Image (cartoon, rainbow, N blue to C red; front, side, top):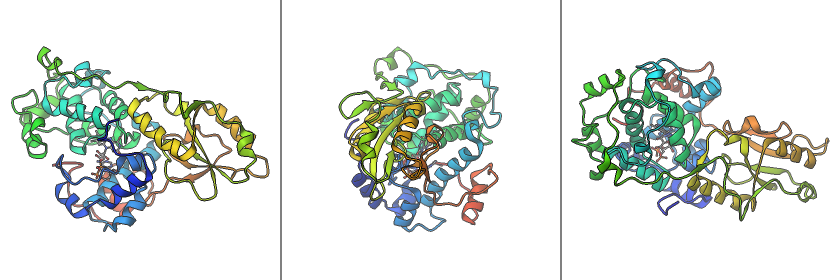
Length: 399
Ligand SMILES: Cc1cc2nc3c(=O)[nH]c(=O)nc-3n(C[C@H](O)[C@H](O)[C@H](O)COP(=O)(O)OP(=O)(O)OC[C@H]3O[C@@H](n4cnc5c(N)ncnc54)[C@H](O)[C@@H]3O)c2cc1C
């Protein structure tokens, strides 16, 4: 990962939180150079929590930034209620599912479409592991409505490369753009890009320079925009390699430590996993674990693995890569009947919880907004119930 990526340390996370300027955020957040917070990798990987950010910033519930934290928790609410159904279209979109291809074309994955806004987004993604929300929306809209790629293929691809890749925020945002989770395809035009992005992104005269009406019609017909030509291919960049587990070597080891080494210490064992990289509770010993099953279906890029394992090393010394059965046996070995279930503790996080053995005491992932039931179909319905406030009419991410 280049120096453009945020550092995977608690100090960097806390510094990013201290640097947030809510007033500037509210004015400029839709601009690619706006005062966005950069908190998402820290929130996704548990170095910070939404309640901690809300408290530190003292945000009133009607602040724009409070809504955005709200979107994060709304997507978690939908995931908690709908489960794996979020990985399929929540309802019909503008076209039948068969109208979309199931692979992201090579010219998109290598930033060689010849459309500046798309190629800049992909280059930025590979260089930093992050993308501004507006850029994610433009990219997803081009992929789904412009190139007729199924939202799920686009979502899986983007998730693999994001440092903040979160299955709820990512996959449900793609569904929102695709109109399988909202009621209108999200489309954009070149003027919108020119207003919110710096000049290298401007796309007048390219394949996406269409009116909103033409875009809307395109989203509702099977026709696709053309792939990048040979001239665009000349500036292609390689897609970073994605793997289902980190490379073994140095502090990253396959297997688990000798349970006796932990068994001699009476303190509870804190399981640091990729979605719980905050400080371990006082008076615990830390075991840092990557569970193979949690990543099998959705590999991560090398830079993301590097980012995560660097922080895990800081927490646990060695990062242990193992499968769920091995972890269950290890938990059994360090746990005597009288100590269950507090001996081994972890944060319950939906990316991993289903693979954690039953002998582990789970702490709920911290939330700012109260859980509401039944599931809310829209953010505004959820916001009304979770915050007790009405939501002014506004779009999802940008103008
Ligand atoms: C196609 C697409 C894919 C996305 N994938 C992810 C993802 O994998 N992980 C992820 O954390 N966010 C995702 N988002 C949401 C959003 O783009 C990022 O959270 C945001 O860009 C992160 O930058 P930031 O921390 O500077 O955000 P800020 O604008 O500073 O917002 C502060 C925090 O609020 C939350 N937030 C802001 N906007 C949104 C939003 N639209 N939806 C949900 N939460 C939001 C995030 O936790 C963010 O860190 C996606 C959005 C789109 C359109």
